[in-house]
Every structure is written in C-alpha cells, then in structure tokens.
Length: 265
Image 1 (cartoon, rainbow, N blue to C red):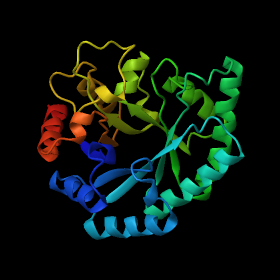
Image 2 (cartoon, rainbow, N blue to C red):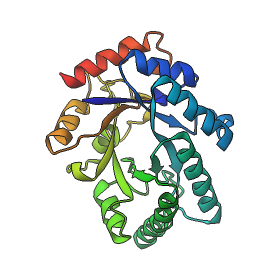
Image 3 (cartoon, rainbow, N blue to C red):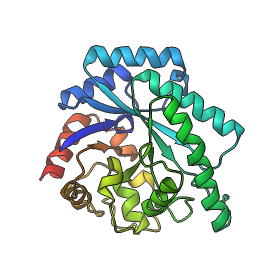
C-alpha cells in the first residue's frame, strides 16, 4: 500500500515540519492545501515550496482544493486559472476539485447537471494548459450539489474529459453517500479518515468526527481500500483527518504509523 499525507493531518506544522513528518513515516508523497495559510498562496511561494520539497525528497502530489467549482462564473474562472498556475509551479500534477456543499444552493436537477458540465468543460482547458489532472471529489452530504461518483463520471464523459479528470474516492464521503460502486479504474486518489463515535448516524456525521483509522472504525475504511486495490487501483492512499483531537495529537507520527499498520492489516 502506497501512503500519502494530506497537510490536514497536521495543519499546525509549517512546510519543513510537515515534510519531515512524512519522511519519518517513510512517506514521500504529500498533498498541500490552500485553506491552511492563505498567506502562502502566490507564485513566489509556490516555487519556494517546490524547491523545499525537491531538496527534502518529497513529491507534492496535488493542491487541495478548488472549491465550488461547479458554480461557474468569470470570478470562478479567474480563481481556477490562478490556482492551476500555482499548482503547476509547486510541481504537483493534480488539483482537487470540491463541489458546492451549501444548503442555500438548491438549483433544479437540470440546472445542477448543466452547471457541472459547463464547469468541467471550462476546467478541462485550464487544466490542460497547465499539464494538470483534476481530481473530482464528490461529497456525500445530503445537501451537496455533487454527491455521487457515478454522476461525476457521467458528466466527465459528456465533456470528453476522461483523460483530464479522475475521481477522488474519499472513504468518509463514500460511506455517507450510500454509493456502492467504487470505480477503481477512474480513481486517481483515495482519501482515508475514520469515524469511531457511535452516537452519530450517517445524517449527523461531519468533518469534525473524521479521525485516523483504527479498529474502532465505523465506516469500513480497510474494506473500501482493499476493494479498490482488488479492482486494480494502484495509486496513493492519503490520510485526511479533520478531527480537532488529531490536530492536537503530540504523538501524531506514532498515531499515523498505527493507522498505516491497521489499514495494511
């Protein structure tokens, strides 16, 4: 199993500390984010981050993420172009795409489908211009405007984007969505995080419950990952926990190592 660390696993660490954490765990692949410290955005910083990663033997897999991409507009196009340029300058070859997740965004079914396709059509060209692949990450929440991977694939194929877009299989969102099929051949990345608090149901699960995966996991992370691998997935398995307890963990390297051992079980 090939592991990766998302910066959300330890968002209080700066880049040298985060890269060092990965290396301590024998991991050389990382995801960086544009929502941890916005002050670090910009082409000058992208080049500096790329140089640091190269010096330390780290591969930056992607930047996470372009949010609300399926609400296309001139400002969104400008944001996408800027983030794509930044991503390419970091040395990453993938950009995570997160759809609108907002109870106030309630378009009709037809308008929602049209919006997804319009945005993918524009993003296809932007990503191509920068040599990037877009990793579409459906969110399983009931209010999300793109919940299902099957729906994402249909839209991707409609715009002729199968070589420019892959799926992010997020184990948490796969479970919450209730979707069964895993689409291993269309998957570019797996995000893992576990839920152990049994007072929560699918309807009440949120990011704050997403911890490192262990034997108390309620959402079958190990089973999901094994199923994808058995179906031919050969990519990275990236840790993306959002729980405050994980972010405060003073022995985070040891905790991640235990989670790795469990997943490889």
